[in-house]
Amino acid sequence: MRNSLFAGFAMIALVAAAAPAMAGNLETGGVSITRGGGNINTALGRHSEADQSVATIGGSVLGRGKVFTNGGNNRNTAVGAHSLAMQDVTTVGGTVLGRGRAVTNGGNNFNTARGYGSVAGQSVATIGGTAVGRGSSFTSGGYNTNLAAGKFSDAEQQVLTMGGSGRGRTAVYGGANHNAALGKGSFAGQQVVTVGGQ
Image 1 (cartoon, rainbow, N blue to C red):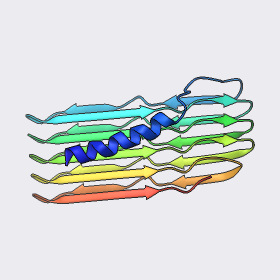
Image 2 (image 1 turned 90 degrees about the horizontal axis):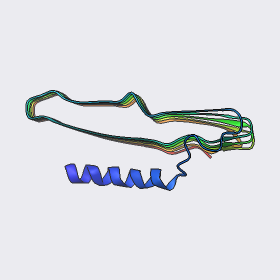
Image 3 (image 1 turned 180 degrees about the vertical axis):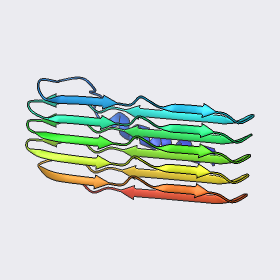
């Protein structure tokens, strides 16, 4: 289960690596704000484990435009004894050439393994961004919660939101999803794919 989850994380990382890593580069006008910080990863329970990976790229403005990319403020917590919490958040966004605005939000996700021996795995990928010429692109894939509360419970959540591009108004919302395994030995699996855009 853990290997398959991290295999999905590796695929998302390849998508992020394919995007131009230009945070803070090419700014000649407008505003470019990239935020990937404010993340908390905590193993509180006895013999618990918490693994967190956060990648935020964003950036780049030429001419007039605003680029906001936020992939931060994520919480990953292994509270229960012998619990395991794994969280991977990838947010790309960015890039405005000419007039336009690209606002991408993939942050503010919560992943919690609360029960004894519970497992919580969360993977969130939000791409979006890119407005060339006159255009707007709004993409939101964050604000997801994943909770394994029951004893020996397992909660697995994967959320992929793409959207993006420009020349006209494009808005894509694939976030604010909730997945929870509450009972003893329960399993909750949620996969959400939202593409749209362009």
